[in-house]
Length: 323
Image (cartoon, rainbow, N blue to C red):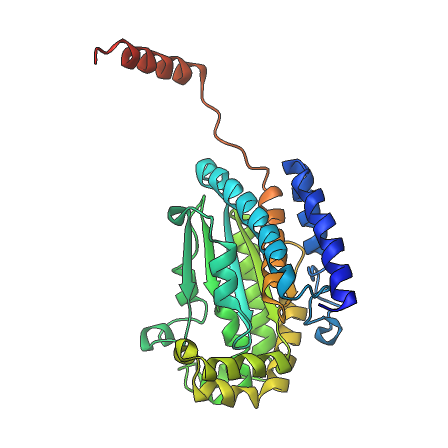
């Protein structure tokens, strides 16, 4: 380990020890402060080129246990808050993940949500639209999978594909059965407006929307693609089409720049997460989710005095039973 890495490891270890002494409230405040640096909020002045793809630290292999321990603290906090969300049954949370191939969406969802009660969480993955999907508006297929009250919904890709891949490959748009006179130079701005209005509608009805762009570098994507080819257990994750899409990298970055700028709002923000370091990205994502849940002012449902008396009577009857 280099001297700089060793110094970072020592500093991180000190911070971790500090985290273990914090109360729940203090831990949430730390998560809020950490995730805030990646929150776009109002996207008017957003520039993707100003966003880092690398983590602010590099601890190397020796630091992995510490990073994993930090992530586990976040996972535990998230699990506890999700339990209250489910019990309260008023709010719901929609998490949207978008990224270039091999940026780590699947792994982030798997690790960050690992402690969540499965009955309070649902994951939906969206690939190419079906013929049925194309017979409806572009939001329709995602609307069917919105989370119920008390639950967390996760979209692995989403309706944002309609202003990403469809924009990069405009021949897809021509095959979507949209009346020709509606396909104008303003169609992308119109879709941004539709998305903003849709997410505002969700907010007004108790569904909070958080959007994550896992910002992986082209260099790191290349490295991960090669690893998928070299590792037989990862061959299934890779196809020639993935490599082909790399040729449109700049077009995709322009599309991401435009969509984040036009659809990030204070109530439905985008988080642009440095994704070259998977563990760091997962900690940042967990911190953002914890922050959103904390702002819901969650609490377990209060039980009436009559209900408490009824429960005590049931308890006494159980105690009085003869074994």
